[in-house]
Image 1 (cartoon, rainbow, N blue to C red):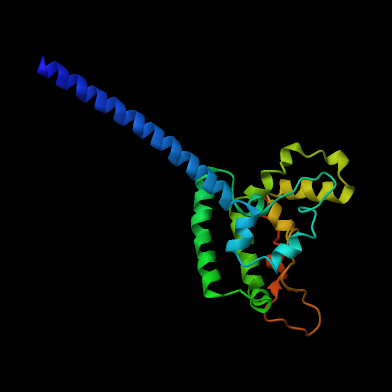
Image 2: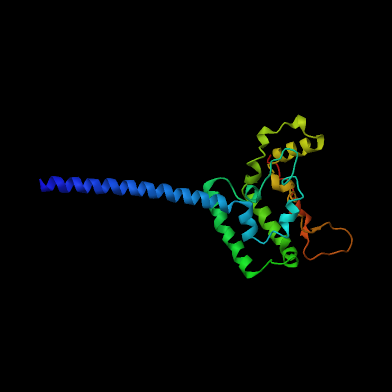
Length: 208
């Protein structure tokens, strides 16, 4: 009799433990998702990254902020992947940006402008490596209607897609001011200027 009662008590404890673990898991998942959504918000970006008086103001004057359709792309739409694992990796790497916020690396406009070429190229490389993943969350080349695009745009898109280029190869400076670009004109030399080949890379060579 005692063995039967002990076994029943043990089963009740196990069942209670499973229920408690399930409830804790749901609560943890809810808190995690709410926190993750908060860290993707514009307010969070402005608070934790040195951008309010620099590239955020630039972004407010672009079509990604105000347009005829009323669809706004916020910071995370362009700088944080939607997929879970790439998103977590991006969040992890962003901790380095928080470190530099506390160090005051770009806490003035002058410091930010001096770092702009480096920061821009870092982001261009990231987007090049992931095939402009964030762009393609909203702009799907497979859904392009070339007949409704201007001749020049349609031609450039078709050529770029055929050559294996990605969005960021051509579409830099859409949301933020470009760093100085070396135009190779005259004897004017800007030590911070980015080579034109970096700004507009050549299309990949076509295989025979």
